Image 1 (cartoon, one colour):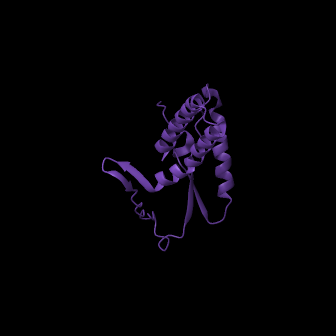
Image 2 (spheres, rainbow, N blue to C red; image 1 turned 60 degrees about the horizontal axis):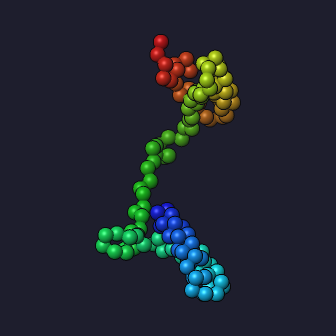
Image 3 (cartoon, helix red, strand yellow; image 1 turned 90 degrees about the horizontal axis):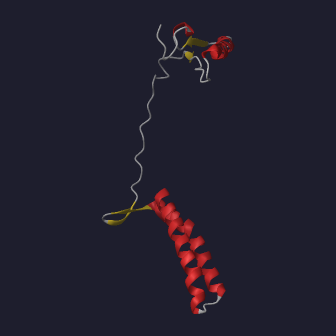
Length: 138
């Protein structure tokens, strides 16, 4: 669909430029030039709609196949486990210096503390003790 939109804009612009340059040479009234440009503009949504339903292939124009329904994936059968749990991951500091790592750890600790006050919710730390830094080795 995007390729049709880009091709239509480029071809429409080139055609409009050609019409605006050539037709006045043959003393065609200016309203005809405007009418053709308006028709090019009005054809854009029509071209996008048609490109939604049809594809250009080496075999010609064919209807776009319908998308097959995706099967849903249940990670845990809800009838087996009624436990609600969440993991809190530490934030990674993307600033220039490592001296501000405490900010991400502090935010994660605050979220962990706030979530631990929710009834019937088990809160886990995503990385062992937040002391293990991602991407660094001791």
